[in-house]
Image (cartoon, rainbow, N blue to C red):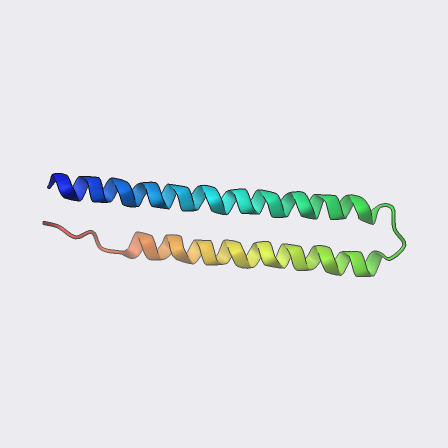
Length: 82
């Protein structure tokens, strides 16, 4: 039983680390998008810049959807009872 607790705590730690890494990456991507939006105010090539920003947001969306699937799969994983 004690081994299961330590295994579960290690798994929880891994999940927390993955969660923190995911949101750190999202924050980095959002900072990049914010910088690009600020650049938009000072350029005439608006359409090109908007495509770049849109692709960044699409990347964030895909990353978030992949994360949501992982979380759903983790929540659906049955706990092994000893």
